[in-house]
Length: 329
Image (tube, rainbow, N blue to C red; front, side):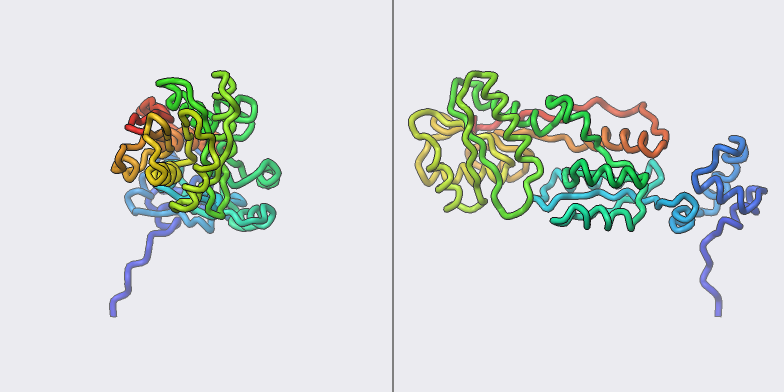
């Protein structure tokens, strides 16, 4: 009986490259700086010829951390933007020698951090699930967390969720003054982005000398949306900045039931530029979020955090946020 071929080992690479087994281990476990470039190139070439893949377990033992980047997601609405971001991160992480694992955060931040530390990740990408205390605890154990919070805390304009609210109000008032309201999601899950978006809407209204926008909570069913819409003033044109396209479509369905003309009486702007919003009649005006641009920035920050050089050339300049004009404003 013939044996199945075994995968190549570090010893095979060492033999082909003409170096010691220890040299191969050092080079693939993050200590390549002690060797000449010619030696490193020879080892990498031998590994490529043999299709050798270093053992993640071995690297973890050598460095105290794995090659895993953990993406921490809040328990929130999971749409196409998140899927695009995860796909992009997985592709880009391969370029910095890492694997990607996604985990949803639990209700207890301490338990979430404890679970993360057990994985011994090389870094954590936080999509809004971790607070400053949780990030500090990870940092104390040598696990960097990106994107950094301090930038957006110092400069609210650098926070894309705040900027989304600004763009929504600008579009809602483009054709004239309106009473603005914010429609938040209400489906029992966490809402890590809504407070910043609402803050952006309030700031934008104050800048335009508009009344402070009321907040309504909308479940994505017709009865809830209709009840929420009835809470708003009916004595003038309204503008709704919605948490996302799904909420915006629920508001539009309620408007149709209440026979509110769109956009003359009620204007609506969503977020995410989903396909279904563009199939609606009237076609939804929305804010597109280019997750490729966001992920490129995160990966650059991530590479810096784990001291992995990433070539900057070839990265196209992209606008993170843009208005997709429709027929609801």
